[in-house]
Length: 98
Image (cartoon, rainbow, N blue to C red; front, side):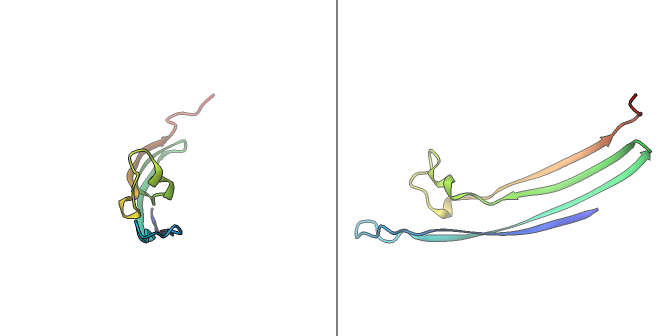
């Protein structure tokens, strides 16, 4: 089996407190990620399967991450999406439960 997903996210900050000291701090950034998935199932008995799956996870950052400790003063370009690979290798039961 195969599958996948494409994800687009837009993040923007609008500076409404314009002053001569710091200027306009408005900004925006686009995030685009692909999450492919591939796997296989082999039914070895009526109650057991050998199952393998590999998939990618993608999550765009949230604006509140700019206010996390250690991020101030951050800007949108400092944010990165969270990505990971996930793997599964088996499922099912080798014998019936009583």
